[in-house]
Image (tube, rainbow, N blue to C red; front, side, top):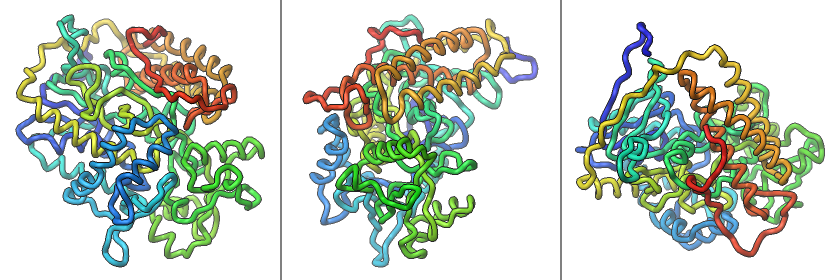
Length: 541
C-alpha cells in the first residue's frame, strides 16, 4: 500500500524504451526517426555510465596504412579462437561510418600537429587505429550524445530510474513471446512505475561490480543480463570477464583505470625493485593482449606477496605526458603521484563482461521486440578476450543497426497491451538492510577470490555453493520487502554471478580470459558456452 506522503506511481507508454544512457543507448535513440516517442532511462544522471569513464578511444580503420583485413585479423587473434568472424567483419566494416557519425554529431577528437586526427595504438593492434579525445574519449562521446538527445523533442530522458524486471506476454498470460515494457523503480519517489513500449532496448552495460576490485562505475551490476535471463533469453560466454591490467592502486582512488594507451605510448610495467618483467611472459611485452598482461601482473604480485606493481612512463618528456594523458596526470597528481617523475602504482581490476545476452547483428534477442546493445549483449565480436577499444565501436555499430531494424519494423508492431501496476500491497519496508550490505560484500569477495583471474574447479565449486545460498536468501528478501536500488542490484549480481560460475565450470580448458589451473591446455575445438533458461536448474531470485 502506498504511503500517504508519497506521490502515487506513474505509468508511461512509448514507442521505444531504452534502458541505459551510455553510448549504446544514446546511439540507438539518436538514430531513430523523430516521429517515434523514445524514452531513455538512467540510474543516475544521464551520462553517468561506463561510457563516461572510457579513456582510451575507439578502434576503427582510419589510416591509409591500415586495412579492414588487418583489424579483423587482430581482433580474431585477441579473441583466442572464439570470435564470430561474421560479427567481427560486420563491426569493422561499419567502423569508419560510425566514427564519421560521431564527428558529425560534434565529438571533438584529438588532432596532431598537421590537424589530422591523432591515432594511437593499444594492446593487440598491429596499427595505430585508436581515435581518441585526449585520454577522456568516453567523456567526450557521452556528453556530446547526451546534449544531442536533450535537443530532440521526441526523446525523453529520465534519470534516477532503476529497472526491476521486463514485462512479457508470458508474464501477462498472453500468447507469444513478446517484450512489452518494464517495471522501473523511481528512486526519487521509491515507487515502481509501469513503462509500456512497442520496443525495448537493453543498454545497461556489464556486470563487473560482481568483483571486489573493478574499474566500472557503481551501476555496473548486470541488470540487463539478469532481467533478460529471467525473461527467457539465452546468454553466452559469461565466463570471460576481462580484468584491466592497470587500475590505479591508492586507498582513496575509487575505480580509476590507467588507460592501455599509456602502454601503447611507451609505458613499461615494473616490479617493486624497478625491473621489467613482461618480456618473460610474451614477446609483445607491454603490448600483449590484456588477459596476458593481467595474468602476468597477478602472477608477479602473488609470487612477491605484493599489493601492487608499477606502470612507468616517466621516461617520456613531461609535456608529452601532460598532452596525451591530462586526465590521468591530474588525477594522479591529486593523490600525490607525479607521473612525469615517478611510476604509477597499479593493480588488475574487473573491467569488461565479454559474454552476455545472445543477439544478432540487428541487436535482436530471443524475446520478440527486445533488443540488446553494448556490453550487456553477446554478438560474437569479442570472443574469449575483448581487444582494446573495440567495445565503444560495438556500441556505435550495433546501436545504429538496432535503430535501423526498429525503424524498418515499427509500422508492423502494434501498441503494447495493458499491464497491471506494480503491486506493493503485500510487502513492507525493510528493517534488515544490513542483510543486503553483508551479502553484497560476501558476494564480491568470493567472486574475487574464487572466480577471478586464475581459477580452479574447487574454487568454482565453492563459489557455486555460496551463490546458491545467497540466491535463496535474496529470493526470500525480495518477496517480503519493498524493493530498493541496493536490493535490485544485489539480486541481479547474484543471478549474473551464478551464470558466470556455471559457465566457468562448463569450460574444461584455458582460453583467453578463462584460465584454470586444472585445465591449462587449449582444446582443439573452440565452442561458445551457451546457457538456456528453460533447461537451466538453479535457485534464482
